[in-house]
Length: 140
Image (cartoon, rainbow, N blue to C red; front, side, top):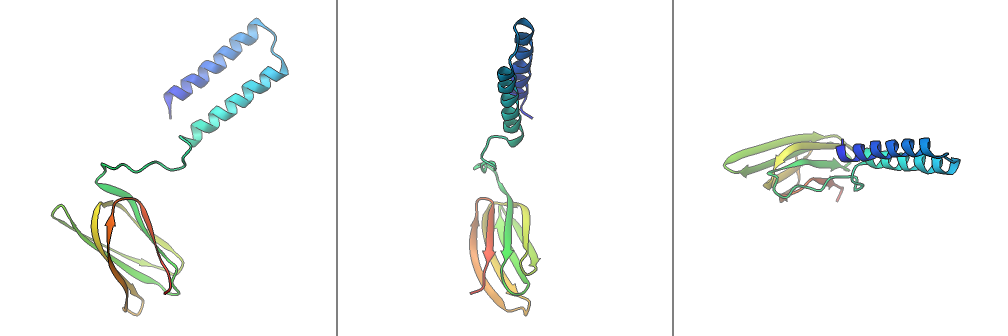
């Protein structure tokens, strides 16, 4: 993972062990050492603490673009766009209460069309895809 954190953790353990050999270690010192190791280990596993990485503004694609269906029936979603002279078409069928995603979608302007299971058009529109998004489709 992060080599500098691992190296610092190893150095702390080595220094504490060397210090323990020179002078008697009390239970309090041992408790501080164990607590510090637990906290540093947790930070190492968890990462930077934000829970999610910040989107890269220079990226040409978004990690994921998702739709969540809160309708009483399944829906179909069609995304169409023309990005850098390339036609992009995505179609998804989303069951009631479920979520579907498309991954590594190029950034740009897309037309979307949401159709009900009866093939009636529920919603149409245009959307500028610039970052990871979850679009929720609700009942009107």
